[in-house]
Length: 297
Image (cartoon, rainbow, N blue to C red):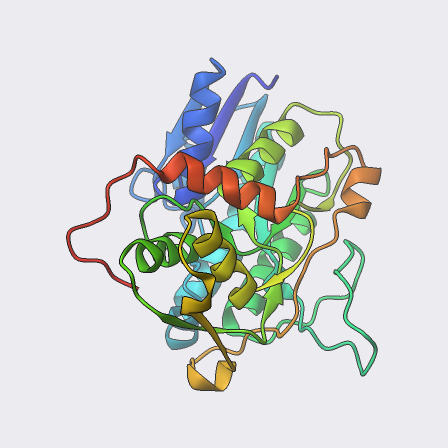
């Protein structure tokens, strides 16, 4: 177990769950929100990191469309910030685990059948967000080759909030019918399962530098939404498949970005469970969470 776990971006979904889980395990935790530590400020980062720490970077601009509108901020937070963390960790003698994304891949297999991306497949991001996250991976490994870059995908908590599963839960319980894109496929991942993988990596015994940590299997957004309805006992026929052209967005998404855990398992990381099992567990956790008075998509 590391001397201390330092969590940057602890105000976000993954950072909050990571801090809570680490606390339950009685770890020494320093949880820093973006207000506590601006990772784009090298001196601010240096004030919080000591030798022997393991820093887990959960800070990021994750709004894919907002990144298109403000590429400067996306690059600062997603690329410069992680580079700052790696530089400070290298100087202090601390470890670093940096979270990245499936959106570093394009989903273009040159006419070959799609297959889950392996850790050594060549990235080719389509969006400002994807390019900024890939630049962050490179900045981290350039400054600290012993760091871990952990790619994950389609992360959700599933109780209340702004994630996709939470939104589908509100639709299911609210009796609504919903149109969901059926032509984007990825690896839906429970934030709780991702956190378990991050803590396992922090404890040592897993080889890097690049890992994939996503629930196994693949699904379209349509598949995922229907699974939410089915788990809640709602009629899955209320989820209707549509093409992504029905919902034009500023940022291009890969049509396929499922992540393979094979290489990560070979490097010592425990495989994450199938995505449907993780989804059912997340829905069970959220059953006692009250719905907001004004449901939103």
